Image 1 (cartoon, rainbow, N blue to C red):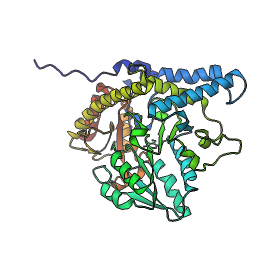
Image 2: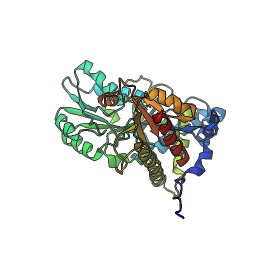
Image 3: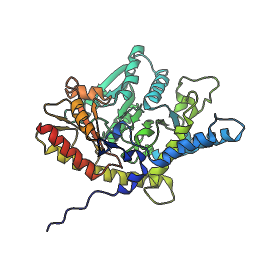
Image 4: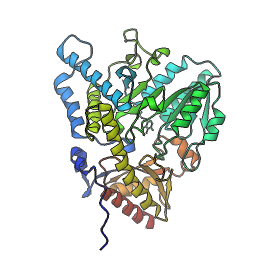
Length: 413
Ligand SMILES: Cc1ncc(COP(=O)(O)O)c(C=O)c1O
């Protein structure tokens, strides 16, 4: 008898950490395949948020214990984020409401240093949060150039080379696409940006939950990500290379600390959620053993990556076998491919297909996921966009099989 291959289950023991997995929808266990829109949250993260409100709730910089505890919680989370991103130190890490808000603040700050006729390079593949803030600068005479997206879901690097020039002041590009799972060629992008003397800002929102990050090997000036995509709460995280934030003038108050990382942090932050950021990073680090937090995080993210890649390849090939299904984005032969699979089903809109999957307890997003330009370029915007399945650590092989089966049923009806 041929032995059935072992199940992909390295992370199944961690499912119990996520209370939200206990839900059922119409009698079916809920399967969260909506991670790219925001991942589920494990109990230690929930506890850290609730403990903050129970014990240490206060504003910062006071001369009393709960305020000192709050300062401490924020600085600890800053150090955790610095470890997660491989930053030089914790003063390179600023917090904000989310990636979009931080990017708007940064774009306004950078804009104050630009002259009419200066150029910024963005891409057609990016989420609107890394396009809109830069496109707005056209109002002040900044020229925005857009790198083309190819139909295979990758950037056109010849076009990139054509459009970057000595007037390019900033390249704003994503590390991974939340719509197609493409991982961009950051080595080439960095080289071209350096040669042009441009700053390099990367949107790591979709990359951070799935790959280890090291800002110094990436060689970026700015990197922005969002903790709610990697098992944390809704907090945006900005990495700014040491001493760079001081070169720009963000909106801020006279009462605000003018040095990094506070320079771009306006008003009172979400302290409870920031406590949760620390807990989420510690939760990830605990997938690995060792003393050094940075090495542990790198190793843990590699484990996450290899697990998710296996599940995602399984889903990709399962969907591809289906005649009525068209899968978009690069293939899983690519070693660097985010575990995010977008597809369409013949004869049904993506919204209607997701409603049918939803009834079975399968949670998937449909539409453009704010990567509206990419979906437009693929010619899918008018047709209702894509169906997107995202893999996270709490997903398992049974959920992938359920999804493949339900998609088959929909496509055959
Ligand atoms: C690739 C990418 N960039 C930016 C964002 C915006 O992030 P935020 O919701 O933190 O503003 C998202 C959110 O889905 C995203 O997936």
